[in-house]
Length: 206
Image (tube, rainbow, N blue to C red; front, side, top):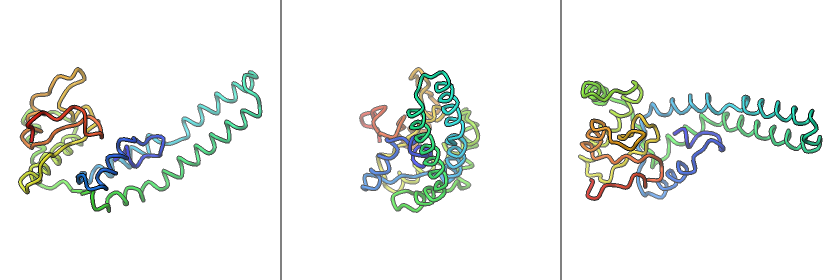
């Protein structure tokens, strides 16, 4: 969610492509509703232009004072910085509209966490899968939703997850057995990005 609704220079091209693939009816995207608020908070926290622009302006002034950049060139850079700042502010101002647009797309299913998912979050903790509360809730929501989709006849279920805590392998590529078992039991293949290519789907996995 963050990788799509963030200002342009923070966006992930792969996230944009994933939504395009859903738009072309290749699949339906299922997203827990708590991701909307989490993405909004993350974008407003991480994508503010003031710190980056302030540092660049300070550096520019130092370069100009040391006569390492001409005044005309400095003026061009300042114009670009102003355009950058205004562009980010405009994108942040449109953030809520972008989130609403995503939530209303017919190929994006936003689901809330229900009692079964909250119960599963507790069961996962007792099973030994130790995650932060938010990640625990997301995992439970994904597993329960996948099980329901499977029971309704859906196949080739996948979870795109860039958060290392929810990936069923560690930084060295070794599997996390309990987390892997939870995904396998729900027939969910986990990808590390939004390309649906890595890691390659295990032959025969459904």
